[in-house]
Image (cartoon, rainbow, N blue to C red):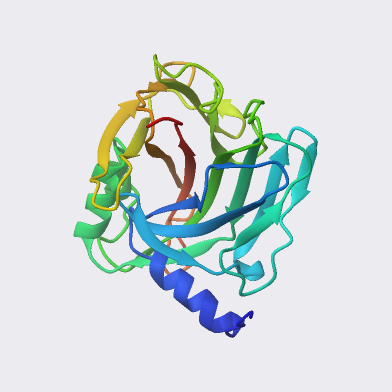
Length: 273
């Protein structure tokens, strides 16, 4: 039975959940490996430390929702209120990249400590100094943001390769965690406007199996080609996160947001015990 809360209620719930700075957004599959012909089921989650609530599908809050497969790209056919947000089979087998882009949202910084913590956590060098140089206030200013999430799921044999899918910012897996040797880690590349992001922070959330397992968080930096090798362990789930923070070109807090953040995430599992 489908339940359909009002669009306004669902939108308010999602906006409230993501309003706090430094909360990640990711795609959370029920299974990262499924049989050919089986349904892919995945939640859209918001939270911290790889833990967070799942949210229903809301068309008005979604700019893009696709399944990129070896046989082509297919739009997700979910309806408003569906939870999990994704529950759909794809033709054939191979590596499937689930792609989700949110619509824009806006948050207001009520105090300086929150913005300072966000900037420090995400390693945006010079952002606090730029804020002061622009003559911006230390509270009551706004930031617009958009999220770009990807997830790798193996259908059947899981053969295939992730690739850029045209998001404003995205993390691309340069090897297949389901079929390739992961002994040396998983190489990934961070892109912004289709170009490599050099010397930027990548945050890695490593969750071992088990309900009581503790997520390990490490912070890495990309090289001059936007690449970094993520150490991985068989049987673990991973969330990789990288964020762009840029000026909006507006220095009048009353006129609109003065900052804009763009969040890229990638989830996958490394098969094993």
